[in-house]
Length: 348
Ligand code: SAH
Image (cartoon, rainbow, N blue to C red):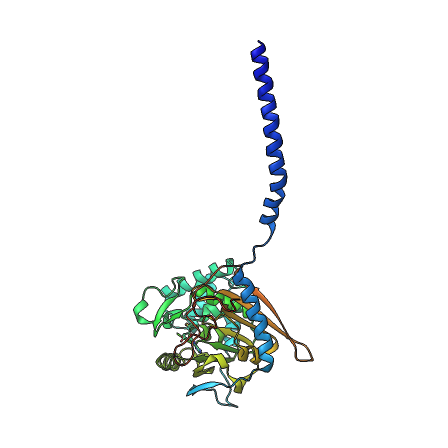
């Protein structure tokens, strides 16, 4: 009995002691655990991306915008009326799929199977908020991706993925195209500059949002191929005849037509090209894949300019941390315009 009582008191003592020790440890560590969970972990790369954005604002004030042009260009003629793509988009019925299909049958020759797939993607992107405004949905619905996906990828026209288009370039995933387009919030008549014409798909979408589309491609055979494609398609899709396009290094923008209310960069870079920031109107929006090779954030950058010329940039990661992989923003000899090489820029 005595032994039994002793063992009980030993168990009680040990339990109490263990409780005290554990309580003490948890008392100390629990707040630490909670606070480290609730603190937002800011990675070095995010800090570097922020620095890259701020640096660009400083440099843009001083830097010139000498444009690197390589001689080939198509520019709409001054004084010649441009086909009004946004007006066409506004006239389209999108209340129901049936109404849209019937409008398309009356106004277009697009293949019915592709129309079904296009509607499905548009619906998905409206649901995921990658197409936020009806204008953006209309522009997406009017653009025949099947003509911009190259022959080697037949069957994948409406797959939600990027695809190779030759010359080391790609046609961007339709959802990323939708998201970047929606982020620009384009109003009809605004000047929009795209860097990286590639397949021509992105600018074709833009041509239903504004008549003022400008696009630059650096790879000559790709520029020529897409220029020809636009000329062919123009007969059935006249707004592509209003797309101004040139062969050149988009890092320097297109000074002749600056400023632009909206700029979309479709090749990856680890900083904002200062000449582009300079050519962005005050109050304008730029969207670009910002980050190291293989993993960029889709960044929205809004530019505010004070009367003394100082620039404030408000940036937002439109996908909340999700990474994408665009092909590199290169110069004319094929070297990346990124400052960092394989690692992130501005390493201490
Ligand atoms: N917007 C295109 C995406 C093409 S991929 C589409 O919808 O298909 C990116 C493109 O950027 C490639 O065609 C590449 O050649 C181009 N590019 C890369 N660096 C460039 C630069 N400095 N100036 C202009 N275009 C560039």
